[in-house]
Length: 311
Image (cartoon, rainbow, N blue to C red):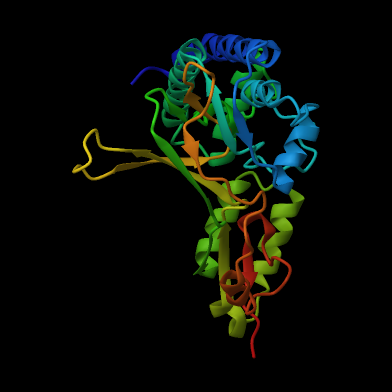
């Protein structure tokens, strides 16, 4: 395996290429927005998408410009250390009809995202013997040295969904946010907290370790970790119809869309036939019932661990 210093040196040029590619794709979408020819679009506006639009300073009245800004936003918008969740990404689901040139730029962008992801993964792997917090700090130092100290890795990694081969129809549906609740032990929690703060210098983590150590024996079986996919996702599915009437319809799921899906437009700049759905996903009652046995506030916020309320 390469020495971690060599791996670190490979990251900055990849990140520069990623930003250059994002700029080219954004400019291509801006040109479509300004073109006299209408290019069809369908962007959904749930609450989190409206928040993303405000954060980007763009309007849904200019969907291609808004999408270009979303694709190109590879940095944190909030100040680092402001309490923003590192896992949260800007999300605007929907569909855009685009020409082949724009699709090619998006494919190149995706390829560079994969290359950058692999470089970061290799660098982390070279430091696998070090504590998690130190590995994270080393990655952030490399990003700072590359001139991009505010790089949002999740936004750098996530790929744009594409349909370069124009489907005959597209089906859309909301997939509700998922939540899993699992039982965890005191030992597991202690180990994870130590990994988060191996030097013992974080007062918040140390306070949670004290809470854990003082947990009454009768409550040690009531620790539950809650893992949440915080936002519903738009599921996009391509439906290819058979060439002959006797052939069955061919169906292939594209994936879960957190950003607009780029679709090969026809000569008129139109999307294929597609289903229209509500801007807001329907609420889930079953998930609410599952939560009733947990305390409203996390016992160990750093781990999303709650105490089950005894009855």
